[in-house]
Image (cartoon, rainbow, N blue to C red; front, side, top):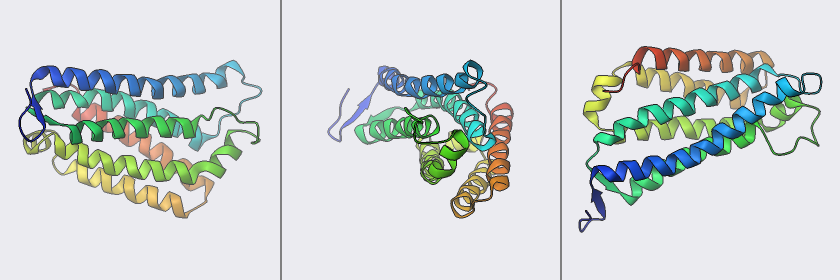
Length: 200
């Protein structure tokens, strides 16, 4: 039901939003999985570059995790178009990052190492946007949800990842990019296992 401020009430709204998000996120997962299977299909031609492949795994985990923790929005009573657009934008960031990780064509590059080194700035800018948007998304779920699920751990995690992303934009060290990518995926795994075993 609509009110004069443009908000909509009712549990069916969440179902509608999840369907739209699922369609958008499906594009990301499909591209990432198809891209990663290229290394199995053509092991002699496609060579794995650790930072690139690790970020691809990170995105898969993040998308799966995002789809899981968005269940918390089922408890939201009032929905507005602004929140709806914000969530769609959040999902679109995953599509953009997936397209950067696995482009449609690689003809002008020598391989994924060459490609990622030339395009990683764009990837890290999108990652920085994603981490920032995630903070807003967390706050949308409400103070009670944040208190019971996040506490002190979340802001520290986000601060470290954002700082690491800013450093990645400034440094060209292959070792740093590899270490940061591995660190990020370990952080994501720990985050999932320790905080989101069940939906409450």
